[in-house]
Length: 281
Length: 337
Image (cartoon, rainbow over all chains, first blue to last red; front, side, top):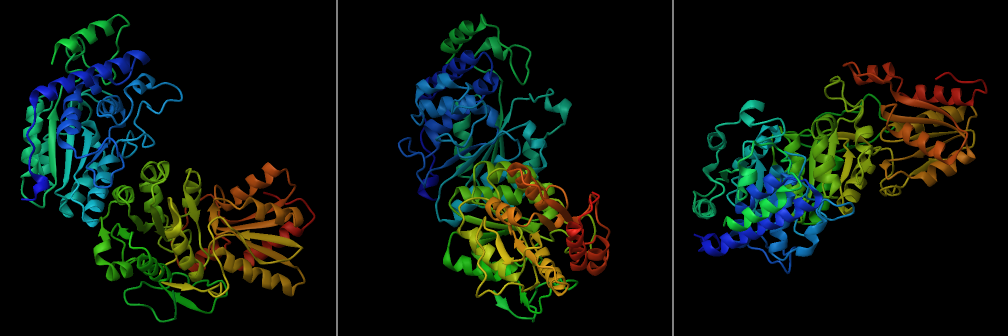
């Protein structure tokens, strides 16, 4: 096995502390604008913690390092989570998080590729997967062993372009491509099973020729283990990891409320949310 | 580019035999050969197609550089998406399909994947306007309007084999997204490769005259030159301004000509709204010029299927129709429409 594919040892205590800081960053950004995709940002903090602080080979001092592993955020509205990770990793200044969603800010509500550390402009759902396939092809053609990691959402799987990309990745045997699907069961018009059923997600990917896993996406060590399994999966197959996540995870006030794509938060609730995020590690 | 009348292996038929714009020579697969030449100069160039390799001449590049060619199947959104990903990892992808599929099916992917971030993606699209008799499903009649509306995108409609080859080289050298209409197979040679110089954004005054002007793009320039020759025999001297780049638009060339000759026929292989005529009208209106303008192009309709000679006459896209339109702009009486 290639040395670069060797799983690394994860430190659960360190990862827990980082995830907590990411959640506090998310709350800080959302509170300042009084809105935002706070549920998505909290729900995906565990994945972003594992990616940026355990898995991805990147250099915060050289965000454009050509050998880096690439993380593609197809779901641009999860930017609030990505910004938290980029700031915590030292790629963008932590103080800049206060400008999230403000007029004239680099930190737009949907992550733009003009910002350091953002590989492509997502947000129009169904784009990131195909571009990730192209990047994985490009890395292989260049002889680099860099990994390409793409994050999609459950609702995004309804876009036909997703399956064009899934087919192409398997056809071209892109085994350095890892796709994550955030299955939080909330899209704009409600849960996917009511909007347009997409299950079984792992079975669909397996039928397309992928190595597929499904895990608790808020269990950081389960994510670590799934990535280890992805690295050692049979050669020639792209890998997908379906994450069952809870929107608002880490803040019981939000996680337990009736869910919506866009969580409404009362002005008096932010202090409670911050306190809860500080307590839950 | 190889100037020859002998079809290259695997190159599909002569799509322009109905009307070669007066050209007597044909060149085989100018895009395919020019892309190979560009690929030999620049090892970053890669090719992709959506199951139309043989029909877009890119199969020649695939045979020459098999490791640098990717088949994506019938999936135009993915064609552009994968190309954008390749561009973001340092490659210069040339993608091919037909105009209709690139622009109608993959519009959002061209706009967001390629243009928004100025990804270095080249979209080379075949069967522009009336270059196939196959009917509305395959005739790219409104692609220029769609592409011209997208910021950051360079939009090129070459006239002939010479310009197809030169525009391919120019697209390869340009750092940014390009939409390039493709003339495939046996392509007429209108411009002399030894003297013609295509540059992105530059119009070419290919014939001067003071009675009226024809501004044309794409293969219509060959017909415009034929019309100008006919008119010259009648004592009418017509300038022909060839505008192969729809975007960026050469305002200076258009306005300086129309300030001098304010009677113009605009001819394009495209519907008469949203393309070259609209761009000229915008420029004229912005500049406050008083100009008499007639449009030659496909009216607001999907075209029938049929033979190209029939269709070109049916939609008044031939050289005699251009000459007749020049007579109309020269008529001092008010012109309808």
